[in-house]
Picture 1 (cartoon, one colour):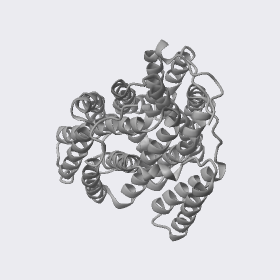
Picture 2: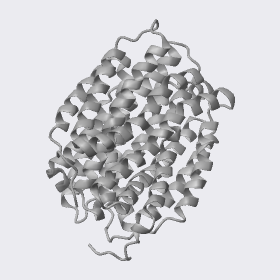
Picture 3: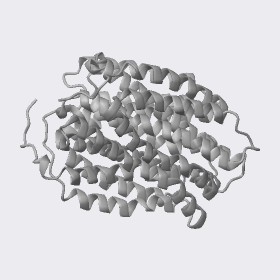
Length: 440
């Protein structure tokens, strides 16, 4: 492995690098919650079924998850700052295309492009932070601030989505990404350039990964289709064979010999599955069963998403003092306990009670992710940070995509029950993670 450019002077501007990454993750997540509260309006305009609405969400998540695997290696190859800038430009363009979509097909296609751009942005933004903060403790705090960017955009999403959908229509939720994207690119222009690392790409592995995730998601959304699930199984087997024999695999299977890596990606899968599955089915429940407007639904979700930012910061402080296990394990248990309480929610439950329960979900999951990410980043060498970030976040987004498919198929209560079991098991697994952050 050879470096073709001299490393940038990271000490000259780590705060600027962090600000750039912060804006990027804010851009990626801004319309996530806005999209969910806008789904009923999209369905009314285009006449889409529940399965079509699932694909509006999953087109983004599936492409995001699949391309994240090679996006990390691409980030390392061209330099994190260059990859990040290209991804931000394409994401902004795709957002405008979503807002101008003439029908469901056009919207789903633009969402695929959005997901691909986001896949490039996410690992490269995290790699920027990893390179700017070599000290393990400082890096953990910086990563917590990086996650706050996503948390703040999630918090803004319900209110922005509800207000825009209720006043200007659902298309407006995509146009708000335009000014954020422009600001991100302007800030990035002042950030230090990242080094390029010679690392070949793996096109066959990438293709089989996409086929696996698309077939698996289709097989679940379309009512457990044996043919689609069979294609997914064969593609997954081919993917493993390709990665085990490739000279430069995009997912080195040797990574998973590390207990820390394996546990991190599994826990990340569970956390995202619980969150995205819950948000999707609750959005439909609020509209179909309770008859709530997009604005009211956004207000119910807002406390949950707002508290994620607070939980991110608390998690960093707790982890710095007691180690990363505590916020990861306890956060998932808090979320599981809250979802048990949500099983009792019905049409007669006051909306403030539902909103209060969702705060527990936001605080629990918001506590787990920063420490989980910092554990993995501390376990991986700096020149493989993009690859590691891609693997972790690919598993996370895959969890979200499959949860939308499964929760949408089985309904609110069955989905919650599955999430509770997974969260409890993942909380126990967190006790096997390192007691302290790894010092480089």
